[in-house]
Length: 236
Image (tube, rainbow, N blue to C red; front, side, top):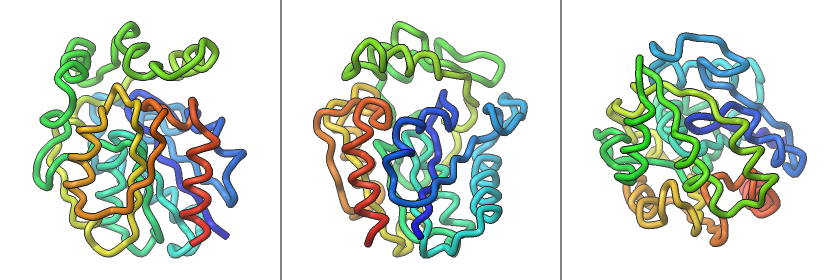
């Protein structure tokens, strides 16, 4: 049976997936990264290695055969997924990157995100943590949402670790032969399509699926379309 291991992006917890999970054809493993609701830690000290260790721990505890695991990373969690593959390739059968920030090999996320988003992150930073300002978050995360979806999205925001954005990435695992599908969101105001295309190029030649009308939080605004993509990947 397919296991979908879902890794949330920055400023969120695993609760962001709750509208998607009932639509998935298989078991679901929700991983809270360190410093979130299900995994207490001092966010100011959390590193990319800590995030990777949390995902590997979750996969091992779940116990599904690697060939049955679809590892799904949203947004900045794409770099966590990449490093999980570097360290524990045998635990993963397929990868889906949902509008993921993937900078070129050896560079950092902060150097390759939209300047306006970078400015908001820096404005909301302090003491090793950051949170996007509410007004900006509504503009860049909720641009395709109705009022109820927007309220859900805003209520789910938490602080995140600033250091993750400045760490150099190693994309070796994404180029190791594990099937990678990149979900390109055509109405994304957080990671605009041109930047998603740059991420796709940095990976190499992943399969590309598209939800043209979706903004950045597709699991909230377009869960049915996203589930269809994930279920198709899982059924292969």
